[in-house]
Image 1 (cartoon, rainbow, N blue to C red):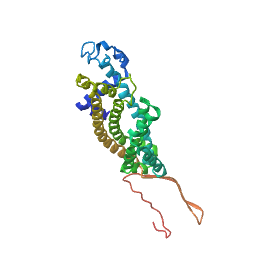
Image 2 (cartoon, rainbow, N blue to C red; image 1 turned 90 degrees about the horizontal axis):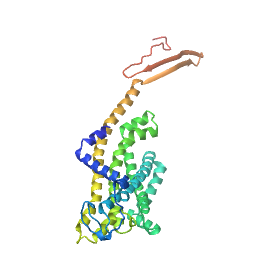
Image 3 (cartoon, one colour; image 1 turned 180 degrees about the vertical axis):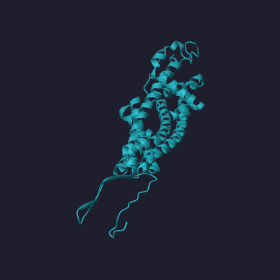
Image 4 (cartoon, helix red, strand yellow; image 1 turned 120 degrees about the vertical axis):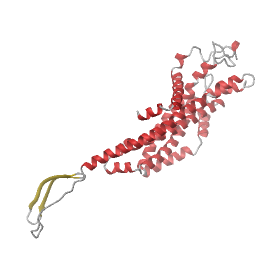
Length: 334
């Protein structure tokens, strides 16, 4: 709640979140907010220009430009977001395991990442398109295969830095389990890093998706996609320049809308984590300091006479207390 309150105070972040929300709502509820079939061909009204019936005009086949732009949100944004979520989950899980446990597990995971990162994402995508043909699913699969390794390396590096922090060492000292340490102390610190890396990665994935569709290697026609529509508009850019203007800024608008709030979220989350980490450490330190020493059922037996010198003694020593033992020595002195 603290992070959300700080984020909502930033006007730029609120505007960016509004842009994202509009795109998401339009993408999820596309059939209910549109009135035309995006693939309806009306060659008699091609390049009709802006009107009340067609707010952004029509393309070379008479299809409504605005409707096709709305339908293009799904392949351009929502499917990319699904691929990003899968990549983040796989990469973050392996990154936590590798960075926290180290040893042979870390070596195996890192060598696997080296294999995946040895080939550029464009090369892997082109290889999958060559093997399985054009299609949105092949590009999504290529995104997952290449991005998880990148996330794994980044999260591993962050985890290795955070496990050397004083509050994590203190948690290990008091006997907290590995899962509790990761969940309570390391995961909150890495959320900001995951958010900013995911936002940057999503922007590059969106542009890469549009780039392949622009080259004719992505979404199959007549499915609406921003890159493919931009390619069609390029052919008439001198006679109908408004077609280029309709498409070229959609990816940039969304990319800037994604990155800005996540960067604000990063700064808010880090400052909040610093405060929460101090509070958690103080609480745990107080719990330990309340009882420095606790002895129960203390019994001391004389090995020569086989008699109990002290029997069933219970005591505790708390912070600020002093323990004094009074008795007789072997010479009879106190």
